[in-house]
Length: 355
Ligand SMILES: [Zn+2]
Ligand SMILES: [Zn+2]
Image (tube, rainbow, N blue to C red; front, side, top):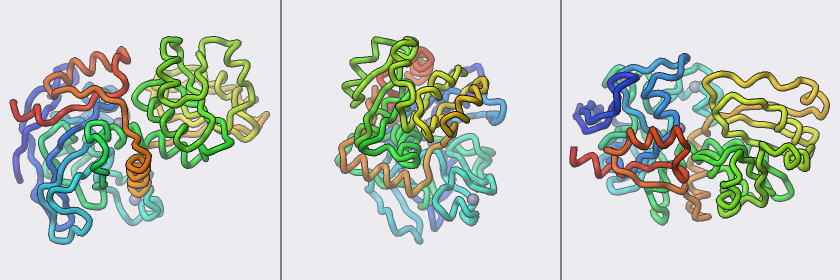
């Protein structure tokens, strides 16, 4: 075991602070990499503050699952990485590997519930009680869960692709965002801005829904063909029964009916935001009359995450980021709650060296 520098929360109510955490020795199947950048996801904040009743936080908690770094060492059986390569890890570091979903490369939906998440999951290696994430100097990850990143892209802006990016890429692919299809993205934050970029890149007619008229210009710059202020009932009405797909990134409980009503026959409303309290049930008649679907989607599997990173390399797509030193992470959490970032914080992990 090696001790590395990190930033950790020691309780739900204390700010994150410098800490030392153990990392396991590099095993035959492992890749060790120095972390260059780690994105700040809303899940980091929820976990650090123990806000998810279904998934209690074990302290100390080291968040971070949008990780990009440079390989330092590889195990004897590793074939796809060598020291010096860029490497990335997202929300998962292991799974059962034997169930139907894992075999299909959908490790996030492991049928045995054995997905090991990058932080706050029971650590199968027992290096510590739970896994520790990317707010740290270095990480050791099983090769299968390590991804390649194009060196042409800015690594600080690549980091958020590992959660925010794949969370939108996967449903847009699954439900067929493509030329000739009309696709809505609800909410313009870390997730939503990636949704607009991907839907546009896939050639779909892309519509952004936002509650704030101040975001109209930004939405169009990111690739939206149209921006609808969802508080305006008349504007919403104009789009009735016209969407093939709407992906909602909103993480607050709200009435889904206004969006269900915008779906065409056989259209789908896909939820990717995780509200603390459930949405009220939509009116069932609106689903029946139109054979509409309400669905959910969680990140993406490892093969699809690599496909997304390759797509981003080929089409020069990254997240819009504000790079911060780790010492500003608590302030970043405060700003995140006010949606005061365009559109993702990315932590420059070199700042950890001054701790
Ligand atoms: Zn995340
Ligand atoms: Zn499995």
